[in-house]
Image 1 (cartoon, helix red, strand yellow):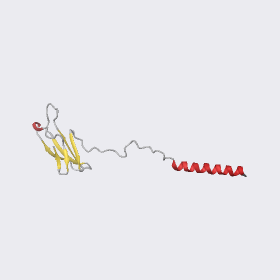
Image 2: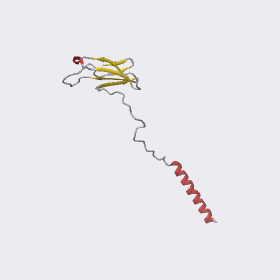
Image 3: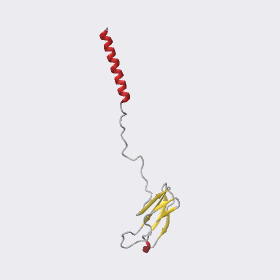
Image 4: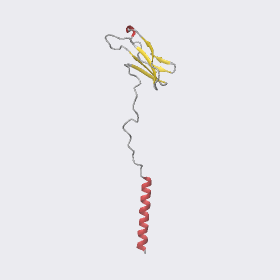
Length: 111
């Protein structure tokens, strides 16, 4: 009878140890998905040399930096969520370096 009681105590101890070990074991790591969950949609299809983003509006410009025969430069704006593309200003070839270092703010874009 003493041998049976000792075996029962051993089983209870092992069961308690197993339960405590399972409760304290870390949760298994979950693999992160490698792929994006959506397909990106291009916002701009123009040449972009300078750009700035603020308050959901994307401003971009093409300039003549390091070009031998400079074209006119343009400054454009479009909402990132989609909307009307606006050409804010176009310069001549002589002043094509106007739109460098764009910085957008709540009240517009600075260059």
